Image (cartoon, rainbow, N blue to C red; front, side):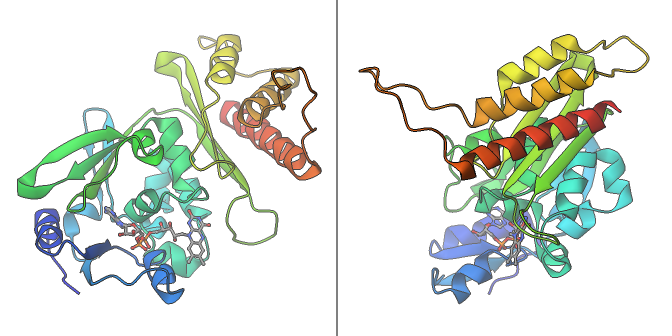
Length: 288
Ligand SMILES: Cc1cc2nc3c(=O)[nH]c(=O)nc-3n(C[C@H](O)[C@H](O)[C@H](O)COP(=O)(O)OP(=O)(O)OC[C@H]3O[C@@H](n4cnc5c(N)ncnc54)[C@H](O)[C@@H]3O)c2cc1C
């Protein structure tokens, strides 16, 4: 395994060994190796690259290193900065996974159950991609998750640019069991008072986080942004939950010949109720 000391060295190592793969905490990658799903010809370890282990402030944004571990992001100083990402990091698996698993690995794996992903989608974060010869390019995280942009073999996620909104934001996750576990559904709600916006993303129920944009716009129009407390009536919170859930898990539509479609199965109806409850609670907490 090669252990470069900088992002550019890591990119150069990958360019020199096209069959090698990068490894950060190894929690996803080694699980795939152990299951016999992957046999990398070489590994480029990212664990010694100091420049991607912390964060810095830049023009109203935080520039987060891809090597930040879930454990580090769960600490109070980070939670004061980006509360929803800290909450997602605290919910990501058992302690040994949180100690090793990284933000960059969570994004690159792009598993539907990646807890950081709905938060980054709601925050409209961008990725700073490092390429050969010091090249850097920025793409919206949603483009990578939707497969609209791919990483080239010698590219790495170096940093994640997240706007600092200085307003409440909440991440909630349902696992279908007690204790740590993968999400069956998760919801991130972010308030953006400067733009009078509510942003919401639903994770785990589709290959990538879903944004219920109409529900966001509707609920934002009900909030008294200039009032002392931006509270909403329980009926509005309930309606928001239902709106989000129906947008993400829509009712089946009749076929072109008018044939009635089959009803949603009990499992899907349960998932829809879970999403509605998470969205309602997340917004209620953000406004409380
Ligand atoms: C038992 C268990 C429970 C888990 N529970 C959860 C959970 O509840 N929530 C959750 O979100 N995740 C969970 N995970 C998944 C995993 O821990 C996270 O996705 C973690 O963030 C992956 O980070 P890593 O550093 O370990 O990635 P690695 O395993 O090192 O890498 C994963 C993939 O990303 C690529 N990669 C890594 N870093 C970069 C980079 N900077 N640029 C480009 N590509 C890169 C690697 O090549 C590899 O393809 C769990 C995993 C296990 C094994």
